[in-house]
Length: 144
Image (tube, rainbow, N blue to C red; front, side):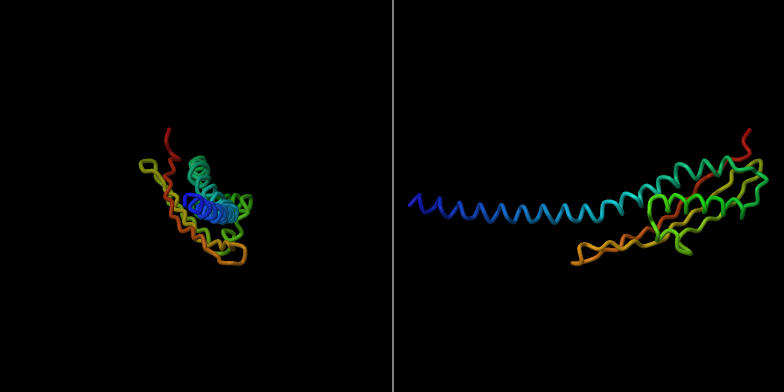
């Protein structure tokens, strides 16, 4: 009787191993497809927060707000192109407004990133990564 119990248990182990391997392969496939999209989106957001804001602070205080906003938007589009995010290059995906401060108050850069990146999981299904971020960055141009 213990011998038949062992043979039944051995068969269940093979099925469990195959199921585990299949689950692991699916997880690796999802990571391979979704990982780069997630990473590049986060890289763009981090770059806007860390590099674009300080660049706006170094802008001349006599620069018109529209010109500064266009310069910032161009920098963001350049980073999106570098990170291979074509959806961010489409019209309306990046909106930048600048409120310049006076000698007493700091200015503000308002950046809106709104785009969707589709990810196809080997033709079985797809998922849309939506980036809808609003960033407010304080610019201190007139501090002496």
